[in-house]
Amino acid sequence: MTAHAFASPPPTRAAVPVLRARGLTKTYGMTHALAGVDLDLLAGQSVAVMGASGSGKTTLLHCLAGIVRPSSGSVVLTTSQGSVEVSALPDSQRSRLRRERLGFVFQEGLLIPELTAVENVALALMLRGVPRPAAEHHAGLWLQHLGLAGMEDRRIGQLSGGQAQRVAIARAQVTGAEVVFADEPTGALDHATSREVMHALLQATVGGGRTVVVVTHDDAVAAQCQRVVRLRDGRVVADSLEQA
Ligand SMILES: Nc1ncnc2c1ncn2[C@@H]1O[C@H](COP(=O)(O)OP(=O)(O)OP(=O)(O)O)[C@@H](O)[C@H]1O
Image (cartoon, rainbow, N blue to C red; front, side):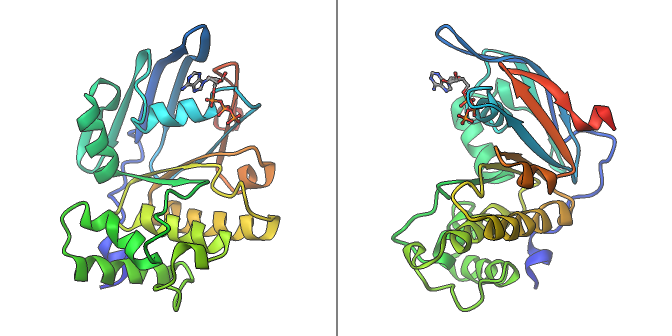
């Protein structure tokens, strides 16, 4: 079985948005981090979310991914397993949804330094009940697929920043997540490595019919995505899809 076979692409649902946000607001005290966002993300689409510091990018990502609940508005996720209103779920069900149906690549990687590359990736499967030998086998296939053959048994601290981000990409992909969220996935990398990591991320996601949402300050990273959404003061002020 190949890495692709284990995390097979979902059927095409071109007309139905994978994520549909309506009237999203998020308020922290006096701060309106999101001030009314409507957004449809399609299957197989790569979307960069850009904007100045404090414009609400991470808050939007966190609301879309069910990490935080919006103050008002809704987020509906539609995958091959059906539709769910993420924003209406209690905390425990949102955690489960994130673990089972979504993938995450954050700048810090969220990798466990004490574990090896293959153990970090396998953990995502073991949390879903896959026995360790099978989990490590499939984790190894994804690491190979992302150019990390021979590095499976290194701890995270023994990898370069770009290699560690590839481990994070493998971890986000190994469960077959149909939507992957990346917050500044290349923020700590040099230009060439950033390009390679973005390429690996896009190949592993969009290449398999999955959707990827990337928060970034970097124009070069955004240019690798199919669509760019710009935020200002918690609102969408530009969307390359609408301009196209
Ligand atoms: N947990 C929180 N508590 C209070 N205020 C918050 C919280 N999270 C975000 N904010 C505020 O909400 C606004 C939007 O923050 P957010 O992190 O979404 O912006 P951003 O565009 O991702 O910024 P950056 O590019 O600097 O990461 C900011 O004014 C921020 O200070």
